[in-house]
Length: 242
Length: 220
Image (tube, rainbow over all chains, first blue to last red; front, top):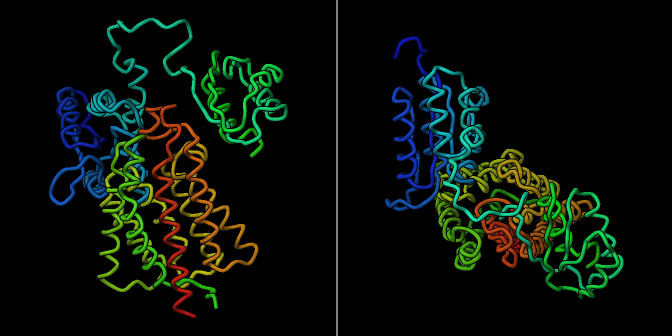
């Protein structure tokens, strides 16, 4: 062990959809923290050949082994279903053992490096977990070189309009239009439906939209995304009519 | 005459029929998944359910309780599916196993089983109804089952209500924008395609109903 730092008490288990990805992330993390115990669990074996996926048994085995050795364990996943697998592993462990495991989330590579560095310093379980979780905001999730086309203030590609089919047969007449107008009033956002302001029952009715028609929903403002999602869901469900 | 309880034999038959039904629809499921996910849902789940079927046909010890069958199914799916549906179905059936530690299930037992599946999927995936996930099939199924049981339906009738509701819920997912899983990377482009996890859930519940009907036929 190096100088004044305590030995690492926390081991990492890196779960990825491909063995190569898990191994690669572990290699990068070890370069920064060679003394930390890091397991790479990747891919999924079908009839002797590797498929993309994650293996609950393999993750459970790796976590159990490190717990047996006295480590606390932080599990990181590369994509959503790797985190689902880790969550299930938590459920399969005895509660007293599950209490020594964290699945904090975070960007896979940056999180693995940040957690490994923290673990190498002898930090406790929750600090190591926090290092992964905070890696995106602390490191800016790897800033790009800044040559993307500039978008107007407050907009991002995620603000693009969404097309949705009106989920009723009666169309956007007075009552559904009123439902929609009331809904958008609850958000700090400017929502349009086929370019008509959604807060105006009259403007919505002027669109003369029939049942099952496809509508384009756009939103700007601080709550643009939740407002748009709520409006899209409401339109899809028929605005209270079938 | 309709039987009032479902047995361990039903549970085994459920899993066998689920394997056959999902295998028959594997191309269709993978096609949905190819459009909005990673294209392997049908193959993954068919492989997993085939393994479940094989395991139940040659058990190390014969299952005494419905929950025993479901636990075997859960652990087998966890280690054979590989995709997100492995942990999701695994958790669903594991929770179902916990509440089904009985030799027989009545209508209320079937409702409790489906509600446990629903809770398992919700806890594991963290999705909400309307997020375009398998929850959009499990939630209406559990609700319809509870309603049917309250009205005095037999286990087979409860499962029929659940299967129909799951199928309707699946159709509804085509209207939704995905906000969970890999389909969410597509955002609005996911609209128009039903969720493959919901579609397979509808098949799995349909298989449970088919097995219950077969039980009735044997009893008649």
